[in-house]
Amino acid sequence: MKCLEKDWYSLDWSPWVNFRDKESFILLPNYPGVYRIKPVGRAELFYIGQTGRTLRERLRSLVTNSLQDSMPYNDPHTAAPSLWAWIDAENLQFEASAAAVELPRPERMGLESCLLWLYRCESNQSTACNYGRFHPHYVKSRDRNSGERGGRLPEGETNPAGSISIKPLLNSGSYREENWMGLNWQKPLQLKQQNLQSIPAGKGIYILFNEELLYIGQSANIKARLTAHCRKDWGESPVKFKYYSMPDETLPHQLKEWENDLIGAYYYQTKCVPKYQFAGH
Image (tube, rainbow, N blue to C red):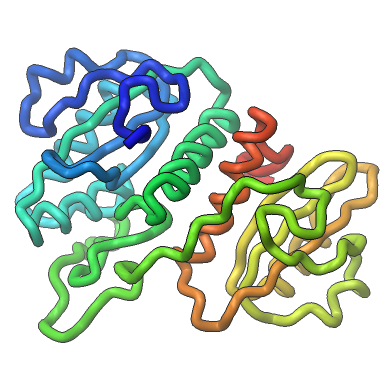
């Protein structure tokens, strides 16, 4: 698979380093960048991430937390509880590979989104530990301040975050087109309160734009989310929106998968991210 190769997406990836072989971490770049994690002996990725710290430092922290005796908290690394659950459930071993990149934080996060989307297109599934996905027989720890650690669920209970991925969106067209990424988007309207009255209070994905793409989002209630966006300052140019409604049974991780597909594909097309995507707007 291309996603496992040393030159995936034309990046210079390090050798694969086993989580339990601490001496080999010297092979990881001592710079910011992106990283990928896979089970030993299996041709699939479980996690893709990015960091503005050094990759070596970030991955040492992730490994330390993932190999604790009990499930780690959700902070400082949200992937650690997920990897821990898979280790505990199936006795998996993991290995990591990393690539240094010199990009500002928004573009580095856009690259992460692009890699996640490319993996979905290649494998027809998502990584097991991104998008809030989790092992189906475990519940995730909360943040350290809560004092609540996760663990294995009682027999017969399952975690919806462990269910299947939604199909990947394939690269097609421009965000200005009515069928961008193969979806039948609703007709664009100006972002004004009076234009939101007829929008369903249901699940979906949406985009905001004027002369450029401003933001890509998802919500369990797109009407409420767009109403909130009406109260924000988007600059002088009028902002338009369009949305795509999704079924009520769509799960939170599936909404995030399609949101990320759109961000990743846009980065793939333009090598940039929507203006306010990772700006905390």
